[in-house]
Image (cartoon, rainbow, N blue to C red; front, side, top):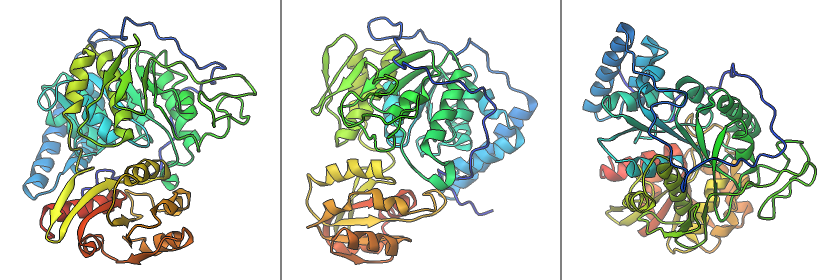
Length: 461
């Protein structure tokens, strides 16, 4: 058996959700009853405590899934997707069975979910205490493998693809969902982002005991969590709003250029946040006290991720100082932001796969020098349609030594030409990194990133 282990594996369209449709309230500002920081008592599920109930089928599914994962790992592959897929084929209800009896926190959104998941998991205790999908396998099969890998853990912090989030929420009724942002990403797979928001809203309505930590500055997120009974709002110092030009309530034009955003037509406005970030290195909690963030990971986007992670950890009983100290220790997330040496210099690895994510990476690059290698594939895990490149401000790369590479190097080259960015085209991303010489920055979408990261770590093999 040969495994092709793609963490973002099955990219088929989501089936229609069989949950009730709920209209969006006219005023989505949710006041959450909470103590000083909104601490929840430890609870094993959103609705009520429920013991884990295994069956002969579920035990067989776990045994086969573990055997597949073990075999893949002996061959040097992660095995998370294939092992979970085999287990679910034996027992389609296995995810709910494995999640029962645990305190489950789900982290989702278009950008930042892998890093935020790592931060929340670190805050909640880290390896050994928390079941989590560190490899980034964020669909149901990957979630099953993460839970199989940590059968004795009473806590699970799981990254979930936003397209699959409704199904997972309805299936396991998590204690908490962290919803970071929603923007266009892989339209060929999940469709328009407004549809994703509607499905999430319907799922949260069907899971009334789930608390949501949500982005108040994103109108689509506000729409998506309108079905939740308890919301803890987080306000980043800036937010991507280009995908929310119309009001999710009345359909009229939104005033999104100001902060807070509002709808002149029906009057809904940005909710008041309990947690906020500023452009510096601090976050502010519900009591108004500012807490420094001394993170190992760079960039404004990671300070925002850390704020969401802190809010979620505090909600589950941790003190702010303990949570932020543990979050600050996260220095590597599946190779993102890592600098990897090679014979001719080094390459800093950066992941960007849609316009919103690219905006954050461009801000980071503005504070650096050196060549930039841009790698774009359009495989199943990336989304087949690369037209999103025309919504990225690649003009900001003018004056840099730029190399276009990847399966869609030709599409990328055309976009760079219209952006008036002189560049070279080299077909293979690994070769492109080596030809820059010295220290460079690789900005790649998912499959290109994983390929170059693994080859650099294996010495080019």
